[in-house]
Length: 124
Image (cartoon, rainbow, N blue to C red; front, side):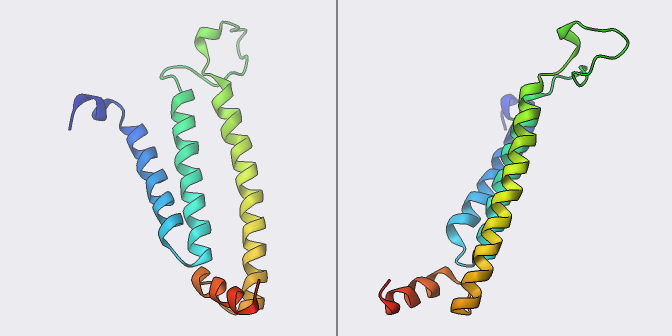
């Protein structure tokens, strides 16, 4: 392992999380497992953004004790992006789960290959 990987281990962890989720999303035929894979991908991306916005030794951008110098605070934009992403991710997950329930009630399976075969038989 090179010195760059050891210095940037958090980015490597975020990349591993993203890769696990992406692989799960591509390779799993089960719809619930695909949703879990998408959430793992989201977590990797949020971890990466939070890591990029953090500055060691700095604090959250809340004015305390009259310190108004920007050199004492972390960057608030990645934190805002992570928070917004989490809200959107929860909404998308709820929508995907509700659609999965509807698909299960209609086709009695969560396997995407079986659902597509049943759709072809129906002529859709």
